[in-house]
Amino acid sequence: GENVEQHPSTLSVQEGDSAVIKCTYSDSASNYFPWYKQELGKGPQLIIDIRSNVGEKKDQRIAVTLNKTAKHFSLHITETQPEDSAVYFCAAWRDNYGQNFVFGPGTRLSVLP
Amino acid sequence: SAVISQKPSRDICQRGTSLTIQCQVDSQVTMMFWYRQQPGQSLTLIATANQGSEATYESGFVIDKFPISRPNLTFSTLTVSNMSPEDSSIYLCSVGVAGVGDIQYFGAGTRLSVL
Image (cartoon, rainbow over all chains, first blue to last red; front, side, top):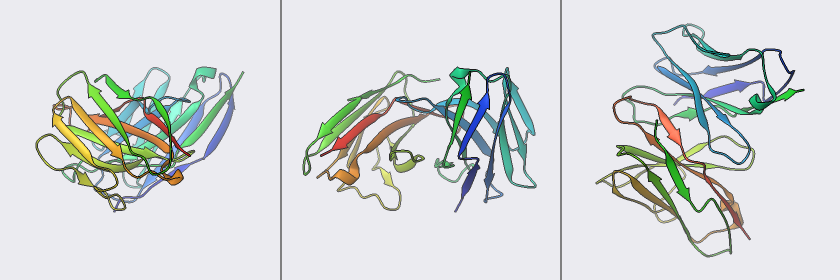
C-alpha cells in the first residue's frame, strides 16, 4: 500500500522568510495530493491541493509542486507570518481505489517574530 | 466546501464506559470518514461510513469497539466502546464532497481523555 514520508518533522523560520516542506510517496498510481494545516485545538484545514496532471499550483503565498517521476511533492510558503505557525500534513490518494487518504506524519512549523 | 459540526468538542470519561460522537454536515454528502489522531501524531482512518450500507473498517479497527451509524446523508455517529486510557485521542469526522471527487473537509474534532 501507499506510504507517505514527510520532512522535516519540525521547522523554525524567521517571519518573512520562506518555508518548504517535502513529502515523498511510494505508489506511483497516486494522483491527488492535498496539504492540510492544523492549528492547536482545531481540525485539519485544506489549504492547497494538486493533481497528478499538474506540476505546480499557487494560491497567494502558498504553492505546491509535484514531481511525479521522483514521487515527491512540496509545500512552499513565502513571506511567512506568525499565523502560519501550525502543524502541516501532506496526503496522497489514488483515484478509484477507495477514498482513503494516506497522511504523512506532519511538520510542526514555527514562525518566529 | 462543507461546514462540519462535531459534538462533543471534548470529554473526560471513565474507563469501561462508552462515548458517542456526533458529526453533522450542512449539506448532503456521500462519503463520511472517521479518523483518530493520537497525541502528537498523524491521522489514521478508522472507517468509512456511507449512507445505507455498513461502515468499512480499516485494519486494526473493529465494529464492536467503534460502532458507526450513518442514518442519512448529513449525519453520522461514532461510538468508542468500553474505553481504556489507550483510547485517549482526538477523533475527527471528515466528509468527501460529492461532485468534486476526492476532496475531504474535516470537523474540529472531539478531544477524548479516558481516566
